[in-house]
Amino acid sequence: MLQSLFKEEYFPILIFLSVAVLLSAIILFASFLLAVQNPDTEKLSAYECGFDPYEDARHTFDVRFYLVAILFIIFDIEAMFLFPWTVSLDQIGSLGFWSMVDFILELGVGFIYAWKIGALEWE
Image (cartoon, rainbow, N blue to C red; front, side, top):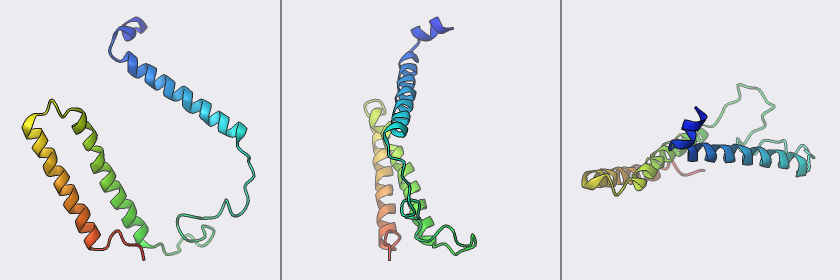
């Protein structure tokens, strides 16, 4: 089975994954060896959510955090669809090209709409 794997087209992917896992392990191990482990109260405090995490669990949470997260996910996933399109642009033909142009225009209209209603404003 290993012999057929070397002859297949999946061998470069296996090499890529092996190098990625090895490099990740080396970087993770080196960061534990070289980094200064000196946490203090300021480093352990909340910095993203805006309130102290040691309060009551039923503390009200601002809905704007959820709105920003949902908008980020939506635009991030839509942008992810652009990568296969750019790779196969020479093979999809005119219909595929104009379909993707339509998709980009709709994405732009959605972004302008979110901007106009103030979903991207933080007050």
